[in-house]
Length: 172
Image (tube, rainbow, N blue to C red):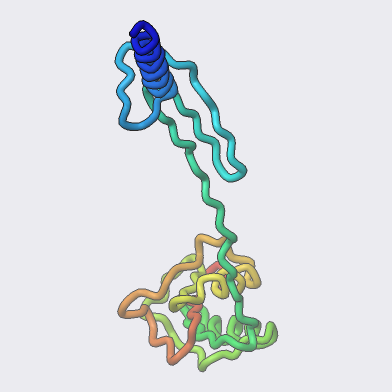
């Protein structure tokens, strides 16, 4: 009878040890109130996760995606309309001629609604922002001179993707 009791005690001791081991290891479903476990660290190729018995800290992830590819059309693929915003006769024609020499297709120059524009501006219809910046650079303008076309536009673009309103800085 004593053998049977010893076997039962051994089974009980093994069971208690197993439960204590699960509690210390922090297995889900087993609460380990008051038991302190050593922190463990798992390193994976794509992420790092630190785990302790009381909390889990997920890594902050930084996703890098390739930069979007911006296809800039060449000047010959673009149409520009130039308007004179100055009191100088022929200012829009001169700028239009310069743009034609650079390879842009130009519409007939026109007058702006106002003739007191001091700084030349380049306006673009979506999605021609990069092309407008390139045109502004070729005219020696600051990137701040590039803006989207307003609705309604300051002048009739006559089907052009880009509009230049000449100021006294370019026309005078």
